[in-house]
Image (cartoon, rainbow, N blue to C red; front, side, top):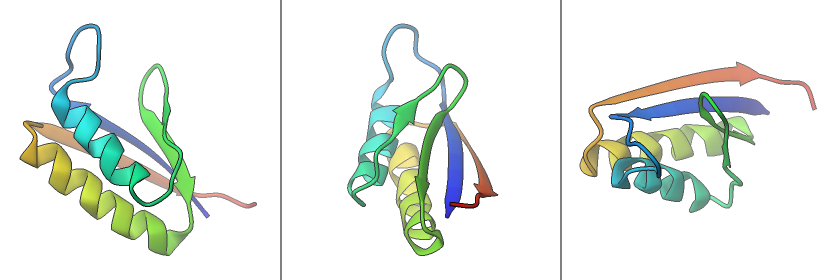
Length: 78
């Protein structure tokens, strides 16, 4: 199982911009629950699902106006 934290820039005051919403929707399309945190957006899934979800996240973020995407992954024990 992997824990993933990601940020998508540029930051938009108030609500997530379309580039963030697209990235989140790309992850949720894999049946993953995404949580917004104060410093990053997070989710957990198995390694195969994370690989596919992160690929889609990055593609959709940039396709919708992102200028910078940061992804941090950590293996966790379940």
